[in-house]
Amino acid sequence: MQYRTLGKDLTVSAIGLGCMGMSHAYGAPADKKEMTELLARAVEMGCTFFDTAELYGSPNDPHANEELLGSALKPFRNKIKIATKFGIRFDWNNPKSSKPLIIPDARPEVIRQSVEGSLKRLQTDHIDLYYHHRQDPNVAVEEVAGVISRLIEEGKILHWGLSEVNGDIIRRAHSVCPVTAIQNRYSMMYRNYEALFPILEELNIGFVAFSPLANGLLSAQYSPESKFDPKDDYRSAMPQFTKEAFAKNAQLLALLNKLATAKNATPAQISLAWMLNKKPYIVPIPGTRKLNRLAENFGAADIYLSAAEVANIDNALDNMTMSAVFGGSPIIKK
Image 1 (tube, rainbow, N blue to C red):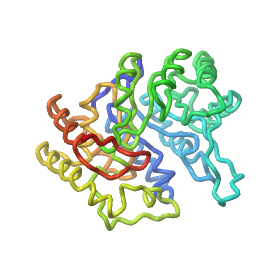
Image 2 (image 1 turned 45 degrees about the vertical axis):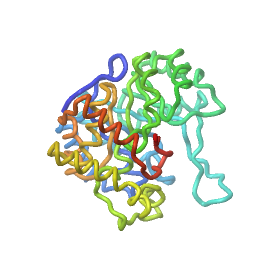
Image 3 (image 1 turned 60 degrees about the vertical axis):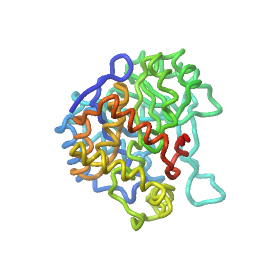
C-alpha cells in the first residue's frame, strides 16, 4: 500500500475504505461478524483510512455503520484514521411517504450533539477527519467553521472537511478554519469537480473521491441483466444501471477492458489508478463487502500510469458519449 497526505498533515493510505455500503443503500445490511472480519483484513492489507457517517444506517437504526466501525476498529485505533460526517438528519414529518426526509441541519447545538454521539459510537476520544456532510442553507458555512474550530481546540476532532461543495464554499470555510479535505463524487463518469483542482492546490486541500467506481459500474462486474431490489438497493434507481445506459457506456467499458489487459489489471483497478496517478492529493474510497474486491481495490495503488497515459485517458473520456450517472451528469466535450 502507498500513502499520501491530505492537507497539511493527515497521512492516510492512498486508497481508503468507504464503509457506507456495509450498512446502508446497497441492500439489506451485511452480517456484522463478516464485516468485522473484513475491516480487520483491510487493516492487515495496509488500509489506514476508513469512512463513515452518523446516518449510514436505516431510519430505524441510523447509526449502524458508526457502531460497526467503533467495535470492529477499536483494536487498531492507534494505527488508523477514521472519517465521519455531521450535518444531516432524518425528518419523519413527510406527508407524501412513510419514509423520512433527509434534511440538512448544521445548527451549532446540533453539531455539538453529533460529535458527542459519534465519539461514543466510534469508541474513541477524537475524530481524525470530520466532514460537513451537506450544506445547510439556513446556517452560514462560516458559522459552521467557527464551531469546528472550537472542537479542534478541544481536541475532539483533529481535522475537518466538506462534502459535495463548490469553490465558493471551500474558500469561505477555509478562511475561518483551515480545511484538510473535501469529499466529492468523482470518477471517470463524473469529472465535474476537476474544476476545483486549482483551488485545492492553492489552499493545500486534499480530495477524497467517493463513488470512484460510479457505484460499481466501472468494476465491469454488471450487465444489462443485473437486478437490484428497489426496496433497499439504491442501484435500482441509478441511471447508469439501466439497459439503455449499458449500450451508451459500451465504449467506456471497452476502453477500461483494453487498458486492464495492457496493464495486467482489472477495470476497477484502472479506474482507481487513473485518479491516483492524476493528482497526488486524491484519495479514492471505494466500498465493498467482499474480501476479493477489497484486495483488488487496494492493488490499484501499485499500478503506475504515466502523465502521458493519464492524458490519453482524459482525452478519450472528453470525446466519449456516456450515460448519465447517479449524482449528476458527466461532462461531455465535443
